[in-house]
Image: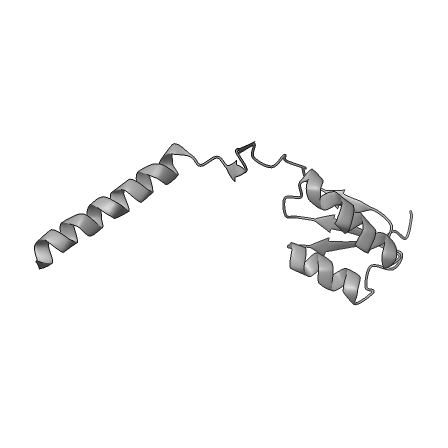
Length: 96
C-alpha cells in the first residue's frame, strides 16, 4: 500500500489556496469542479511550483463555441430577457 496523499479542491479558489499556502507539497490534488483545457496550464504550473504531484479531474469539458467573439446564448436566455421586458412594459402601463 502506498502513502499517496490526495487533497480535494472544491473550487478554483480552494485550489489556489492549497497551492499558495504550499499545502500540496508531495500530494495529488483532486478537483471536484469542472476544469476546461484553457485552465489546465495555469493550474499545472501552480501545482508544480508548489511541489505537488498530479492534478486529478472528474472531467474536462470544452468551453462553449464563440461566435463573433461572443458566447452563444441559449433560447431560454433570450426568452427570459423577452419576458422581463414584457413584464416591465406591463408594470409601466399599470402605474401610468
